[in-house]
Image (cartoon, rainbow, N blue to C red):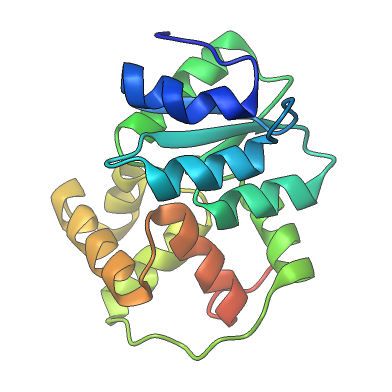
Length: 182
């Protein structure tokens, strides 16, 4: 841990000064809430850190808005220290922290159909597995390819969807109807 902000307004200056790899952002913060602070951080800081939003599962609106703002994932406030450490490491390595049941629930409530984007068969399969919450290594195992091949597919998916990260790609997949809630 390199720093702590007491208010949402302190986040951007602190990040510019300390340059963390990952920010744990509480949704409820004084002066500027965590959702607006996330947007501001990702829109104004050059080479911004990954953002993990800390929230309660009971409030789907916060989770959805955090992901739409560009957060790489979210944690529950009741997460244990080992889970937080694992989440930070996962996001720092370039993966997103998604809880499939929550994403399906959010997509079902908030989805807005969009035209499908042209993905190859392997990219489509990769995106479906991403939507299940699988890591690159897990996807590689399922598809019988190397993790480097999965990284290439993920990069192509992000480019084709115009997504900043895996989280935005999965949200787009649900919103377009490419992936449907079970």
